[in-house]
Length: 563
Image (tube, rainbow, N blue to C red; front, side, top):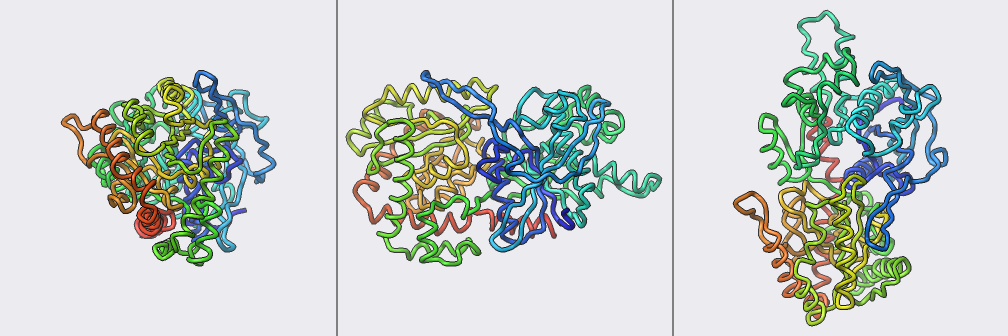
């Protein structure tokens, strides 16, 4: 059993093991890296998530470039330990049994952080209820709400049943877990049922921390009140009030905002955007990070062991990368790049060349991330590759199964890539997961990111690249506003300003991208090795030493957990 934990960290997805498909993308990867750093630092934490038996999905891309999905096949018992603990929750008046599994994430020393995975696939439940935790972000709004009952209400009850003591903070990583606040309210009402002087709302607020991750309104789960009353039942629904509901609906973000004493966005710009969105609430910002050891290529880990021996214990020590000799940095990068190129050629038969400048773009395939921005002017891209320096482009990323616009974006990139060959070599790698992410972020020469600002909350893939000495070429949004020192840690695409309608122009941004490739990136890569290596070292020393989960978690401890 778990005897003590000061922080209970709730997240719909946590990517804590590459073979356990309980994550979809950046939110889950961040959660996994947070748990790893908590284990490294000895933070007394327990994490709670759902056991997604069918995973997110296994992605295939057919000959036309269209994405299809299959369930992920994995054997739960090969990785997780049953706890033998179950609890009951009510969904639409039915008793639904939830069982708990456990996985211990090891730290740098002997400390571990247990991850508790909630599972409704038990014989006592109906066939429909047994599938409630199977699919990450699957089904309709009704299915999603029922899942969030399992995560929030079931999660708190499981922690109580496990006998976890000493929990001071419940940290909600995005709004999916916000129903845990209703369970805490219920507990306070039961403990002090007739004490009119008790402010149960304030008591819950003191216990809760909320991190919001998206500046896109559609990214905040919202449910019609009729559905909420039916799913939760009168006992839980009566805990909702007008100050919790928003515009006649249960908005999970507003529920978490109302019942949290500390709220933060995930980058400085995202904090500004969130304060504008939620003007009646106080929103701080703690910029995301990544777990250095988890995302470092073997060649760079060996290099750091030789020159920065305490880098695992002290991420800030990466600033010493400035003193690593040129030839050793280049050899470490070549080794990582060779691994990626061999994988690409084995999987796609594309004939990628390790000596050619390789740009990587791997994100969730969503329209606002604009993965096809670099193809806006095909003829100029051809000319750059022919006359300035050969360009190779590698893409990866999944579209949500219900996002046909995202699927069309993947297909568009695949088809444009074929049309532009052989002047520019383009591949789209299927089934983007944490292993492929590690290969890509360490093996490309430049990390490309082209979202439509201000819709990028933070982004962490460029941080992973920086750890491996890979500079970013990115729109000034999310974390890159803080990480970009022009020509030193990478390059900005365009300026940090928006048009009159609050958005940027695709045509303007694509021209800025081509200009930067033509005048800065390609000439330096092909003709100024010394200058290129200086940028690589600064990417590690300045960005790698700061944009990591060790620094991030220290800020959570000081501002949110033990303040």
